[in-house]
Amino acid sequence: MKQGKAGRRSILLAWTLLLFVLFGCGKTADNADGGSKEKAASTVASGEELWQGFTIENRQVNSYATEFQIDHLSDGYRRITISGQEYLIVPEDKKVPDDLPEEITVIRRPQEKLYVASSSAMSFFQALSTLDAVSYTSTRASDWSEEEIRTAVEEERITYIGKYNAPDYEWLMQEGASLAIENTMLLHSPKTKERLEQLGIPVLIEYSSYEKHPMGRLEWVRVYGCILGIEEEAERYFDAEDQRFRALSDKENGQTDSSENGPKVAYFYFNPNGYVSVQRPGSYVAEMIRLAGGTYFLDSDPGEDSASGSMNLQTDQFYQEAKDADVLIYNGAIYGPPESLEKLTEEYPLLKDFQAVKNGRVYATGDNLFQGVTHMNDVLEELVGILEGKSEGTFFRILP
Image (cartoon, rainbow, N blue to C red; front, side, top):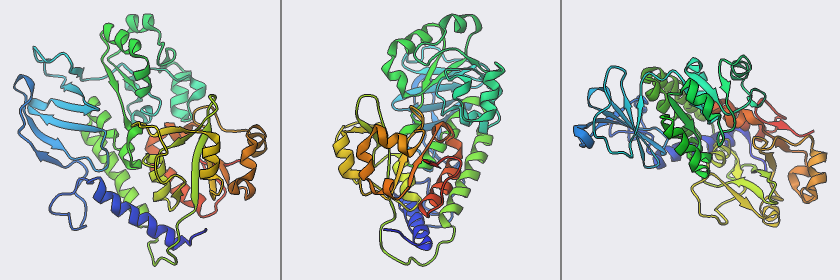
């Protein structure tokens, strides 16, 4: 059922306030009563002793992100912890400490020859105006949605060196790389990680796609600012985006005209194995739909115990859950968007019975939604418009 604009904005604000409570949002005792949030760069004193005499002087307080932690150590060193893996960031004028535990990955500043295999991570370097620090990628020029990055790869200022699980090791041996930034797909190819490390290239596996809040994903800009040694620039960027997010959340907040739920939305794609791949109810995509005033079509996980944001459904299960959805969004980031609604329903006839298909409210995304992490506020604003009946935009296009 359709909800008025004011009601949808109220839901957006309500969800934002709820998430501020659930995820901590970096609040301190001074603003716990709902007052203005402290600057994103706030830290708390720790004093915890680590290895080799290192002490945590301050622990950075994340606003939304739960998948990384940054600790400020003595003498300008930093520790980043991601999914239990510790990374020691060594300042340019400091030495690598002797006898560090072997499980700690050392990353030295400056970083000038990065191998960024994670395509979504590249947007952070673009946002921070540091693409010149990136030397290699595992995404072809034609597969980049951002023109600036695509041009850099076409002109070989950033060199394509093969797929993430089979990079050109000989090239890397000859040219060298200061750090490899991979996404969690590399966990399925452990020999690739082992080979990179044998070449003396430290590997950082990033988990930004596991964040449950859209702004948590964007907050990973802090990780890259820390690695590059431009933490203040990263904080300014994130703080501006956070201010924009909160302004968007407050925008046109008025009296709700109804207590009805927002439009029901299903986000999915058909994979080659015969399943329907969907986002989990706790994923950042599902949360973004809720923040935009929609109702995600799954209330709870129907199976698959996994930390990943995605899961597979049988087609009949998907039919039962999504046939009455007001809006269908086809995720075209993996195998590309469908050519048309007619082509999609020809290939998957069960969709013809779906309410959104009958009403012509089927949209598709492309690579730009997945790759453009730093456009999160633009995506959210556009999604709000779509749920209010607008036809399409930059990140979502209606299937003809």
